[in-house]
Length: 130
Length: 130
DNA sequence: TCAATAAAAGACTTATTGTATCTATAATAT
DNA sequence: ATATTATAGATACAATAAGTCTTTTATTGA
Ligand code: SF4
Ligand code: SF4
Image (cartoon, rainbow over all chains, first blue to last red):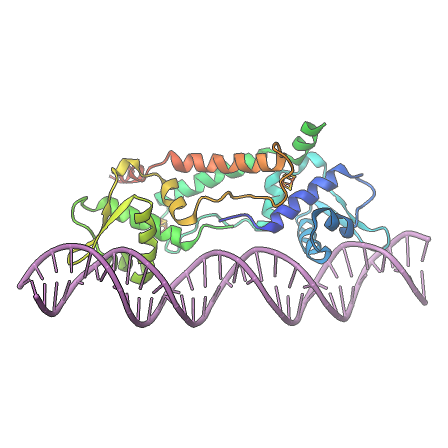
């Protein structure tokens, strides 16, 4: 059980976008080069972030990507879920009634993780850097 | 990102074993039937639990599986890691120095989840049931 | 001792998902 | 108009998950 590489790329790209001007977009070309990944592949990942509403794209010459929301609104969880989806970590096939204990424990555990990811914003990192 | 079905089977099997007598083992046949999974496949999963030291197997007539440790020592995390391995949820390819912040956040999040799974024992569930 | 029983191990198949490329299309600045 | 850049879709390949089948090894009961 691991996060996919796509999530890795997404996180790093978002970090790069936060450092960048909120006005002038960066092209996928450049973003891909930094991470050593193919532009077309990264493009797909970025499209998902666009659909999740956290970045916006500009077509045509001098186009590219830039943040859409306020930086501080973007949490780790947002990014991860945009890529990984929001299916539950543990799901059983035969649901044995409402208060299944196995499920309860697993879901609680997942929520612990998610709550940490939700409370950490990308800007927290940038601030620490400076 | 999801836990595999194997983990699901392992959890349910362990729960069944806890309910059972600690002396007389249950055969994989029976355990598989309960969960609607093929005995050979479940057998593989159980072998991993044996190697992790939390159950023991008895060959031959009237053989099967039973708990090896004291019930109360077995945590959810033990079972999950026996099946899923203990690789980190997030790993980056190019390690940029010791105090990488992305990694730090992700690892902390994972630890939050694991700590919950480590502090919950399977017996907690049985007790609640009664 | 011997046959029945049951787990362990390994080779193998199939399905699903992750990772990536290529091509064609739509939008935009100059 | 043309060069530039994102978007969408088809496709290819690899890795992992999920499961089957067969053989081997260990144990018990008759
Ligand atoms: S016991 Fe809980 S986790 Fe297991 S199958 Fe039933 S509802 Fe699902
Ligand atoms: S910034 Fe951190 S997570 Fe990203 S590649 Fe460097 S070490 Fe890894």
